[in-house]
Amino acid sequence: MTQPQYQARIPVYPRSVKGRFRTLKTAILILAYAVYFLLPWLRWSRENAPDQAVLFDLVGRKFYVFDLVVYAQDIFWLAGLLVIFALLLFFVTGLAGRVWCGYFCFQTLWTDLYMFVERWIQGDRNARMKLHKAPWGPNKILRLGATWLAWLLIALATGVSFVLYWGDAPVLLRQMLAGEAPFAAYATAGFLTLTTYVMAGLAREQVCTYMCPYARFQGVMFDENTLIVAYDEKRGEREKGRQKPRKGLMKREERIAQGVGDCIDCGYCFQVCPVGIDIRDGLQYQCISCALCIDACDTIMDSIGYPRGLVRYTSENALEGKPTRLLNLKNLGYGVALAITIGALVWSVTHRADVELAVYQIRQPLAVILSDGRVQNRYRIKVNNKTEQRLTYRLGLEGLEPSAELDAGRFRQFTLEPEQMLPLQVKVRRDPRFVHQVRESFAFVLEPVGREDAPEVRHASQFYTPPAQVRGGQPDAE
Image (tube, rainbow, N blue to C red; front, side, top):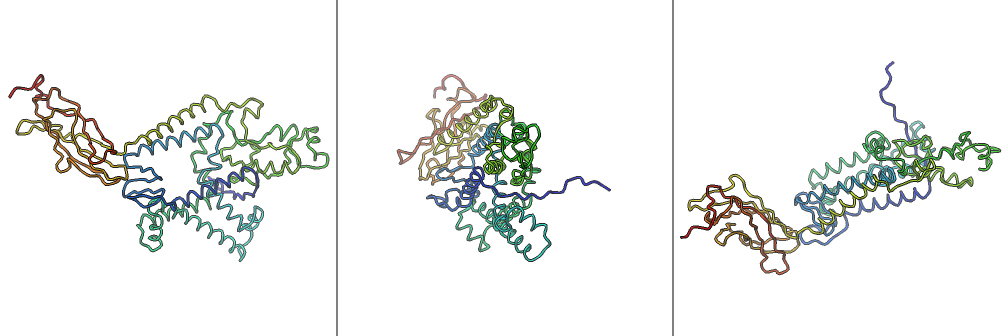
């Protein structure tokens, strides 16, 4: 008989628990859902875009985040943000293990909500286990059907809410309900509805165990000083291991005297684990550091009068009686790199010019000799008004002789609407008698017209003259 290559999934039925870490997780969950579902509906006054606080306008190639407008050419900000997230993940992991997974990960947040719904409809751990083992009947169909329907509604709300970030939320929602929204809106909402339902409702801990790469490489970021959720084996086992309370082993002093550990083998820590592991078996890659086992153990310790901390956040060094040094060289390195990256991104955002001028020299060909002997270079210019004001500018040259000619057609003076980008093609012509080098530096200048508060903008460029046309020295006399 052929052996199966993969182990069949062992269903996990987490038990409810109360405690400080469960309270913290619930608070983070409520805050995260409030931000995710309500942010598209937060209004923010704008003159040239929908009044939405956070709006990702793909058609206009602009992202609106409150007062900040991010343009396509600011894409390097996204790269900086991704670097910050990566460094923050490494830094926090080096300090406190997988707290991201346990408290902030989208998979954890949505699975937590699905478990709340499941527990509300089907009951706690024992009731759910009994229900799933029971034969199909009206009660089982009603409870499982209600659970699946609630999951589907949550998944649908998740998918639709994500789509609302990419358009004016009230208008886009009405269009979706009326069947008038773009196909991409329905496709995106449908895809996220399906993936949310499957990942949070059906796959659950398998996503963390088998699909998430972070679970696999987290170990390389741990060291003996990293804070992890750990079972104090010395205290819990002592010489004779863990045993259930019985006559002569009820009080802690009696257990210590007989070499029996403080762990009473109740299994509560295992029952509350959302990934189905026993923390008493040591650090395991499946553990997401949610700390629910700490709440469970502390609850039992309080009930029998034993001190808390049998399961706790600690380090390998602390378990061995050594000092924990969180600010070691590795963590300091992550922290310094993170601070520098955040500082650079903040500086870039706060020092962005209100009006940007980009100049690109057209290189095919670099220079043209006109019939009158003058040399002509062409340039592609983009002027971007990043303010909400209507601005008028005059384009000029700086750093060339007065006889140099700028040909911008009818755009020598132009008006930019708020958040408008204007592309131009201009020509610069020079008499070779005034040219002394093959390449000479100059600048294009945008001079504001009619507004003293508007910024003047410069952009350096170069003028190329074929070597055969360079005279050198002083220009010839007429």
